Structures are given as C-alpha cells and as structure tokens.
Image (cartoon, rainbow, N blue to C red; front, top):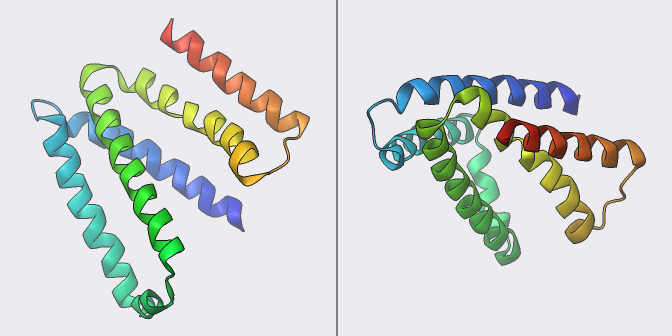
Length: 137
C-alpha cells in the first residue's frame, strides 16, 4: 500500500512544480515560498484537527521534536532554493534536477540509517545522477 501513497506524492509533486512555476512569475521567490508554507500549514493542521490526531503531541519525545524541527528547516531551505530555481529556470529542467534528492537520499540512508544497498538500487541511483548531469550540461 505504501506505493500508492508514493505515486500520489509524485503526482502532487509534479503539479506543485507546474503550479509553482506559474505562481512565481513576477513574484519574489521567498514571498512565494512563504505563502505556500502558510497554505501547507493550514492544510496539515486541518487534517490533524479533523482526525483528532493532535492528541499525539503529548507523546513526542525531545528526540522526536529535534529531528522533526531540523527536518522542517531542511524542508524550508529546500523549498526556498526550489522556488528560486523555478523562477530562474525551466520547470522541465529544475524539477528533474530536484529529484537528485532521490539518489542522495539513497546514499544518506545507507550512511546514516544503516540501510542495505542492493545492486538494483545502486544502479537506479547512478542512473538518476547520470540523468541529472546530462540535464545540467
């Protein structure tokens, strides 16, 4: 079932790139990111409140909070740079280069999480990196 959510994520990420490219036209990219962030905040908290999932706040440890906070910082920086790249470049180039994050995540999951790297996954990551280099050049 995880793959259904992953495919939905990919579909919405694709729409994000298209809508964002249109949205950043003649707008400061940082302002555009801030507006997008407010919308995401409202949607996410709306879902949490609707489903009564806010009760889980009491169970968060300092460890959970620390890593969720730094993940949020990383996400925010990613969005700021992504919107700036969209403003300056073609969405058909920026979005695929942004997906280099997939190959980097594979590498970092091996280093920091101790996940095993299969040949198929390694070759897939190398293909993503090769494609990214091809797009940039």
